[in-house]
Structure formats: structure tokens, C-alpha cells
Image (cartoon, rainbow, N blue to C red):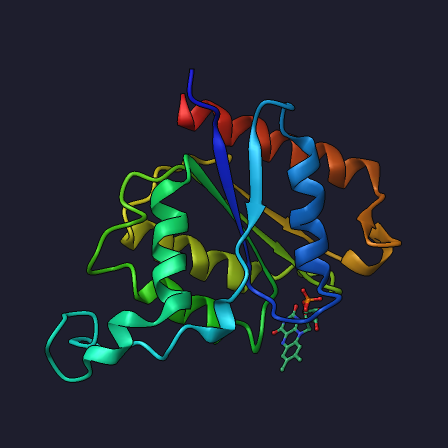
Amino acid sequence: MKRIHILGISGSLRADSTNTIILKTVGTLFPSDVTFEIFEGLGEIPHFSPGLDSPGLDSPGLTDNQALARFKTAIGQADGVVICTPEYAFGVPGTLKNALDWTVGTGEFNDKPVSAISASPLNTGGNNALASLLLTLTALGTRKNEASSLSIPNVKGKISAGQVTDKHTIEALREQCGNLLRLIG
Ligand code: FNR
């Protein structure tokens, strides 16, 4: 039987990103027969503009962009996707939104089971970004339900030495993993 494979996408490019740490912890919470990888290279994806994704039109070179090709392939090959993102200026980081916009025309996220997580050092938990991300994931036609999202407030106190240490947060992340696996079916 084919192994379930999950892709993690962090909305932060920072080396010591709290959101990437959360994703790494998520990767440890799936059953051992589930494979998990975090996408690397979100910042190398070019700026999206309609038409650039059609070969032979305005800028054929962009369709050859390696990071973009890897991004689309990674989503296409994953059975489910976990996105964990910070909030910048009450919204989704431009780098993440840009990458998602590239998939509108090609449909890699269509019917893809997803979990959406936001984390913030503030007590609002990145709620604005999470709400916006969920709207985008709806527009992309992802498979999700009312339990497919989690916001993590005051994140700095819940992480230590590169791991999530707060047991309530770990439990909530474990529920995200379980819900995602049920959506995959
Ligand atoms: C932030 N931060 C932030 N946090 C938040 O909850 N709401 C917000 O609107 C913003 N806006 C914002 C703008 C800019 C330019 C920066 C640099 C930061 C704080 C942000 O949540 C914090 O830096 C996180 O630690 C970023 O996540 P990573 O990189 O640790 O994953």
C-alpha cells in the first residue's frame, strides 16, 4: 500500500522561524508510516502575474523557474498539506500568498486535504492572517472542514530549543494531524 506523504509549507523565510519550528514538530506527530517534508525555496518563486504561467507568452522563462516547478510538483505529489504562517501587517506574508497564487490556474490544490496554522508572539495568534489564508484555500478548492485550522497565540513561550514544548499546543497540533489524515481518508 502507498505511504501517505504530507508536505509542510512555512510562511516564514527566517532561519529560526517559530512557524517552521511548529511545522517540524508537526512532522513528528504523524504515525511513523507517514512521510513528511517541509518545502524549501518559497522565497525563490518569482512574482506571479496572470499570463506568465502560460508557456510561450509574455515571459517563457518564468515557467522554467526551478523553485516554482518544485513547488507545484511537491503539492501535486503530496496527499495532504500543512501550512503554518506568521501574520504580517494583519495579513498573509506576501511570499506565501504569491506562491499560492501560482496554483490558481493549474489547480495543484484542487481537492487537496489541508491544515492551516498561524502562530504569533501576540495574543491574537495571527487570526487575521489565518482567516485570510482560509479564504484563499477555499478559492483554491482545497479539501478542509471546520477543524482544519489552528491559531497559536503567545508562541514564544510555547517553544524551546527548536521544539514546541507546550503540551496543550502539541495536543492541538496532534488533532490537526489526525483531522488531516481523516480528510485524506
Ligand atoms: C510582524 N509581526 C506581526 N504579528 C502579528 O501577530 N500580527 C501582525 O500583523 C504582525 N505584523 C508584523 C509585521 C512585520 C513587518 C514583522 C517583521 C512582524 C510579528 C510576527 O508575528 C513575528 O515576527 C513572528 O515571529 C514571525 O514569525 P516567524 O518568522 O517566527 O515564523
